[in-house]
Length: 125
Image (cartoon, rainbow, N blue to C red; front, top):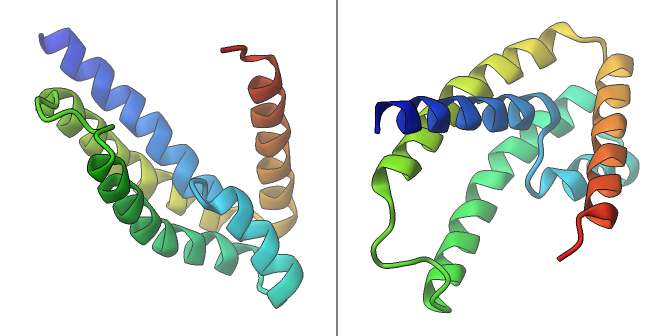
C-alpha cells in the first residue's frame, strides 16, 4: 500500500511537471493557437493554458461522471496520490519554464507534441 502511494505521487509529480512545463491538457491546442492567432508570448500562453485547463478538467470530469465513466467507488488513495504529486510537479515545472528562453520552451513543447503524436499513432487499441 505504501509503495503504491509513493508510485502514485511520483507519477503525479511527473504528470504535473510536464503539465507545468508544457501547458498540456487542452494546452496541446491552446498554446499553439494562442501564440499563432493571438500573438501571445510563449510563456504567457503556457501560463494561460494552465489556468484554462483547470476549468477544462473540471468540466470534463463532471461530464464523464454524468455519463457514468467516473466510478462511484473511486480509489481515493490513487486519486489523492496523483493529485499530490501533480501539485508538486506543476510548481516545479512552472518554475523551470520561467528559467527557459522562449525558443527552448517552443522546442521542448514541439518535441513533446511530436512524441505524443508518435505514441498515439503506434499505441494500438
